[in-house]
Image (cartoon, rainbow, N blue to C red; front, side, top):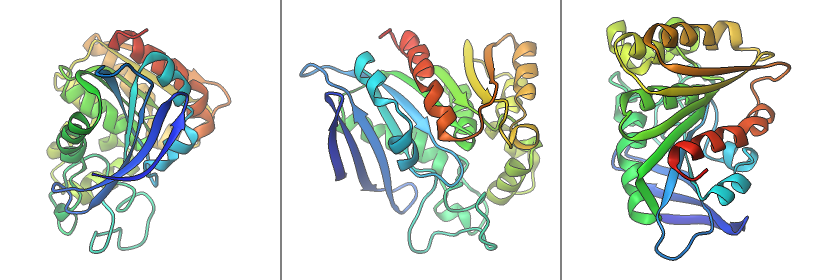
Length: 280
């Protein structure tokens, strides 16, 4: 692991780091905020997965999480959204919603993406091992959250590993990628035409197939331009109601899809996570 930058913030350290990933076959960057803590202390970890076109930098620069993380004693980890570098396949038409910056947190099986696009394994296996080795992380206390495509990732990963993550939340998530254009394009391109293979990467389908968590928190801007076509939170509400999952779905009037929206409600999400991680 190499240090790209470190800066003092709220008594802690905001860092950006890189490493050679064996999983993706590329160099990967990620950011970590470590709050002030006593020597030898181990701190709970909140994972944040970003959305389409983003890198680690979007939430790091605009997420406004450090003050609350410093208060509660939470490590905040923000991975990249896709592999990058020479030889990494991209959308052949240069579209922004597939390829670079749009890994959708799956392990691709289709050429030419299968070589590098292994974001599921990267986020669930390789990067957690690195965080555990390099930072004062209590890996017995983890939670996960995300935005848009990253909200999809947080929901699917949280539902797949309920024993690992004590809390799962999302901002404006893609809840049913198998039923919306963004997801159908990504799942078809990365995983192929067998729609049954998509279900383990679809939060609504996972719940329909028996995946369970105690509770979910979702905030959604009511003025989000992607709401009706791509996000469709009503599908998650119906799936959770049928499964008996305690879903808090907050429709926020006047808010859109941007980081102005995320920053507004970031503190509420972190405090919700903090209760479940035993620090609030």
